Image (cartoon, rainbow over all chains, first blue to last red; front, side, top):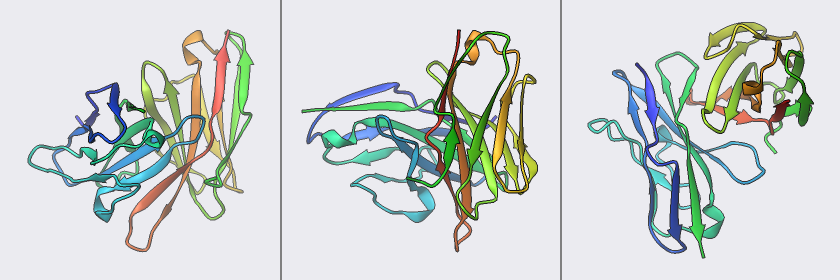
Length: 109
Length: 115
């Protein structure tokens, strides 16, 4: 079955510390993976997608097909990074996104 | 602001009732998605419409239905409401980029409380 797992419901780090939000997926084909972010009282918005290989707000994520992972990383967390982060998987031509349950990141001063 | 609008912002109703949530996609976007976000279930995909036709179905209950109209706005109808239907309901619309990648843009959501 196609599935996205975000093992941490809550991740708490101090400002300036490195942060890694884990995402593992289950899919036998060629996946498309995304990270979405939801800041407090704001709507969900796309943070980055694996095919773009971009860095947004200092965050990067590398698709590791061997480990079926797409972990989100930032070397130095900022307080404004505190938000809910969702990993999502799109499979094949199906437009449906399969979502993880999300990880709430709290960056403490 | 992503350009996707949803009304109402908040809705409080009683069990057994029926409500309609409305979504207007971004100008030019043909696809509309509906999601339910609850505390214990996270974000759950409900249904997708593309240019007026149902394209994909997720974990949508039989008590729920949706449609997309010729002007591309969409409505999600929730009937025989139960306490467990209390959640944030998001709508998203999507556009396909030049490289074929698709981005979903989310609305602000409708918060439904069933008492």
